[in-house]
Image (cartoon, rainbow, N blue to C red):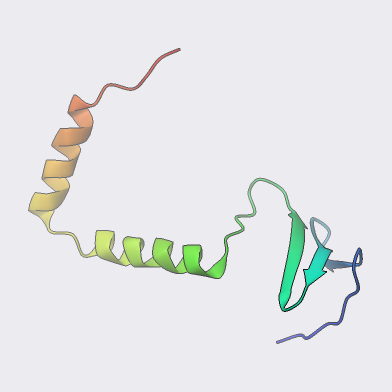
Length: 81
């Protein structure tokens, strides 16, 4: 793990297309701003873990459950504007 010290307003760069800026520091909390292209997915750790757990559950779904889900999705009509 790379450990860096940054002051308010300072940045960290990851490659050419990701920029992380320290926006605010209050006590033990740091507010970060992240600029990245749309194809770079950024999540808080707890959200990332929930997504991974849902993916694991979906990968272990029974064929019957998948069939039921597909049948339900065919019944749902997409909203058009």
